[in-house]
Length: 314
Image (cartoon, rainbow, N blue to C red; front, side):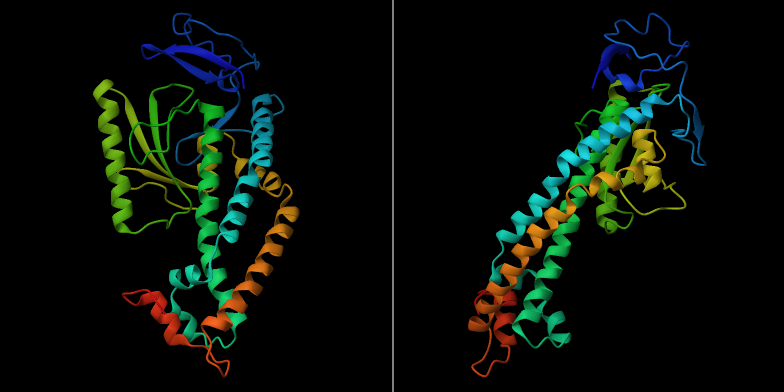
């Protein structure tokens, strides 16, 4: 990525070259030094959606910068998606039978009338790995969102706890955005949402101590799903298409990342399924030895004991 050094707000800032447009309104005094400049034959076409932020028109042939960011994001996803698969495989390899029995609700599985060791092992594993999978992939998507924003708006890490992104709106630099990234709209309970709002208020206070006149907008960005009304009391909630367009300035990015996400997915899945089968077979044997009566029926009292007793022993 090639950067330009722009002087603004009393200090130099590094901006990705694909964001430096041919803007005749910028005075020569505001641009002190430019290492390299890409002339895109005028400011790239843009439109405003119903909620005010600007999105590039990807169908415009002159929009070379959009092709650049698509290529950059595609390359990043293909190069880093293995991190998600590797983490999931690591989680699977390091499981223990007693570990998964202690982490999930045994009463629920008793209600399901599970009768065999394999049924119980599969159910406990699926419940545990599903929750872990969501958490791990959300963390990976967050890193992707930060990478995208860094290569379009010149993101920098916030010094305030709970804030994942800070950046200026590239065209005017009059708005400073603070963003907390979550997986989907219903990510937290009332206490967690109140904590996020407090983080937003704290971040705004810190920013305005150094620049009292600056406009600060708080955004709760959600990687998927949609929300018809993004406006909240003291922050906005951008979800799915709206969120990815907001951090990248490209309206179709939310669909563009689907293709590279499938990079070598089959190979990773085959390795994962092989290990999953090994774990199920091994745990089924252990379960039959430790948690079944001599007649082969399941000892649910022992399962409840290692899960919920004070001693934690079966």
